[in-house]
Length: 366
Ligand SMILES: *Cc1c(COP(=O)(O)O)cnc(C)c1O
Figure 1: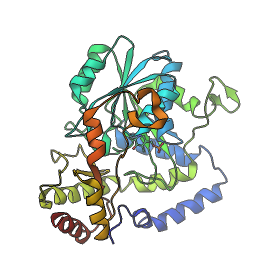
Figure 2: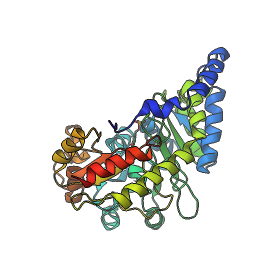
Figure 3: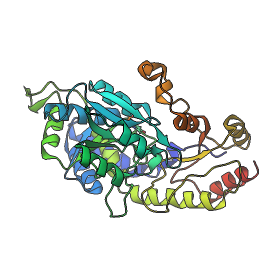
Figure 4: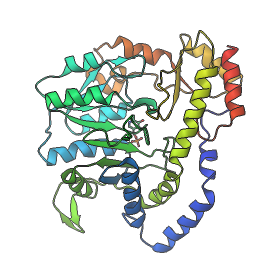
């Protein structure tokens, strides 16, 4: 049996340290926005190379609070259009809607599952104020092209970095430090995952950081002094203790994922299976290893019989979701085809070479 993802195996590696730090946390008697959150913010900000990191409740809130923060600063307002890839996870779109702005869906390109740049350029209107690129599956969005477009049209870039902790571009800059602000999720399955919910915003913008520190905590500048109409969206202190421990192993884990990806890409040889396109660089952290197959149901059934777990990321495109009826009339052929064909095969830093061999063999025999 090779599970799609063994979260228990990932986390037991840290058990002794978790126990130690949990004891210290318990004994401290201080459970909200304490020293663990503070040190995690410093550590994760340093990891991403940004001046600021603000811990928040989850990834969706990270994205939404960035938009709310820009509203407070007068850089964005309700009704502004925000460009987003039509094949993203629904959270990106919900964040824009919840902040009272208008998501404008842009067709994807089928090789790297990111923006089709021509479609993106064509979608820019007078009310477009921001682009929200998603580093989907762990691979950086085409940030150079995006930055050029953003500069020429005076748009903010807000990265959805929920799947890309540690992805690094050719100049050594990391996800979270490639735009004006970025939202991260520490949902347990992410490359840096908590044992519950968690999220963070990274930015080099002093004003945005200062507003977000208030917004996440009832708009308060100090206890019971409320300057803004805020939210309750704090990163949990106990999750921060776990994240601080796991962060020390993130680079190593990402390197292991790339090693497994290299193996898959060089050894999977089956005409029915389309492999991901990757330049071999650190711009991909393989949050997911996504292949494409015409007859997906059959392929997944077959792997299941071989004892190999798979998942689909994602089965229904946002514009066809019941929750997003305002987009139901739209058509994005590339996006629809992506959603019809993608399958994620096992990928995790604790997978052994033998397990990967088994996956390769099963796929080659399909
Ligand atoms: C996981 C994820 C989110 C949301 O994170 P939560 O912590 O679950 O709210 C947002 N965007 C993308 C691309 C994600 O994968």
